Image (cartoon, rainbow, N blue to C red; front, top):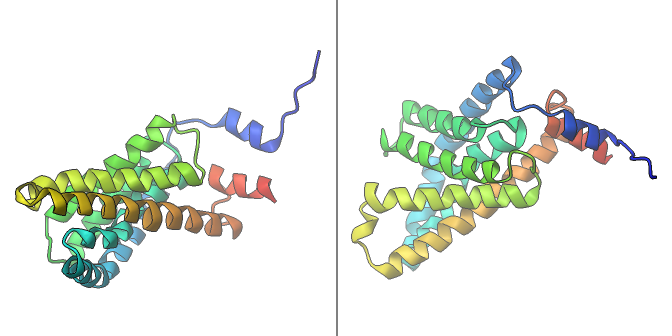
Length: 209
């Protein structure tokens, strides 16, 4: 008969609840606004990169899309509750649209699709795994959702199969790296400062020390 050892990480995993707290709602709003400002700042840089990459290879412009997918990954990794990834990405898109960009209301549609793409990945892991692999898959999922949306909202369905194949690969890879890996690294950096001490992400960082 063996005795089980309850480490802090194991106890934290057992005690996690998917119920939302007031602090979760507040932080989702803060993250949404912060990512909205990031999206707005990226609008010019990302658009130039997008057009430049497309000029080299049609469809390769999707390689610039990853930063616009960051909100869902951050929301999912930090809040770890159903709907968090979707809400952060959507709020970020609304903020970006309200500040002003060339895409207008379609930005909100993109935020909804991208957030849902990331959300489905975290849901597939039953909101229990939040390491690098789920982050990468969430970023890629957001990219896939955006690609599907743009088949209709951007007229990509009428473009060549070659364009859409390149655009799919570039957008998914960009989401995996610029949203997934970068988002995971940002959460780890924030957690190491103690800023996420009221969240499982912060407690996990302490347990790793």
